[in-house]
Image (cartoon, rainbow, N blue to C red; front, side):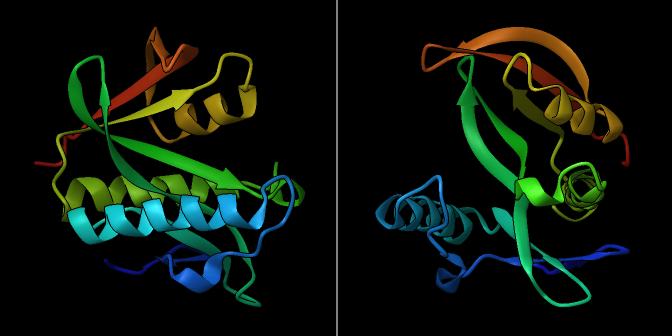
Amino acid sequence: MAELETQRLVLRPMVADDVDGEAPFEQDQMYSWLERNLAHQRRHGFGLFAACLKGDGRLIGDCGLELMKVADEQVAELGYDFRSDCWNQGYATEAACAVRDYAFTTLQLPRLVSLVRPGNRASARVAEKTGLKKVEQIQRYGQPYLRYEIENTTG
């Protein structure tokens, strides 16, 4: 898996040492989540990137791609999650744009989706700034999500 660089971030493949066990998750939940992501990375050659600040290398979140089944279709979801003390600084949008470009130019994926919980305006704004358009509301595991989508027009 590649390493990506933006103006303020280094997006590198996740590693086992990235588990820090901070609230709201217990240590065993973090290990389980990280192992699932590392397994996805090994299986598909891509996954979530650890988002680190260029200046001090501090891990502030993650952003990347996950293959999943949505409405009986295999799709690549562009997801992002950042520490709350790093919100509203443009990091998620910066990372999501870099991952979108990587997905379309390097991996040549045909389309990306993002699933956003209704009411999560900040996450919806990141999807919109990254070029994704809201297409529908869906149910996934009994929970409502807004489905955002973007087509690869690079080729």
